[in-house]
Length: 132
Image 1 (cartoon, one colour):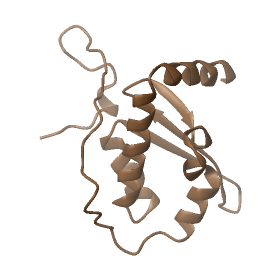
Image 2: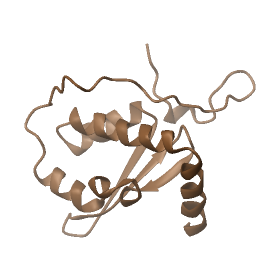
Image 3: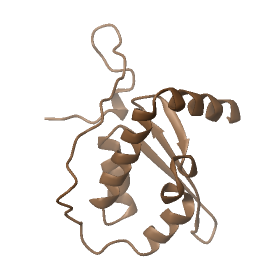
Image 4: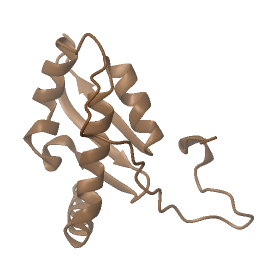
């Protein structure tokens, strides 16, 4: 697992734009969510899975983001302090009461960049959101 995180770190150093896209996708999902469930659902539309690890008493002690577009697994703290477990624990305990509508934010899905299998199928059809 440690080797995987090291490879991901190197991959993102080579492509800082992708790291910025991942942060922006998480920010958009958070700005338009009022619960952990809605946050996770919005991230799935961006081809990102979020895994929050909790203690027995429910405190978040770990946050991991899986970007299927770049096949990268990131600890929240690797993205920055505002994506670390403590931040999510506080946000989940005190989520916004309604979705914020930020006039400066626009919705631009990040490109999936996923290779196609023979026949044009995506490699993980259950993980890719269907767009109308």
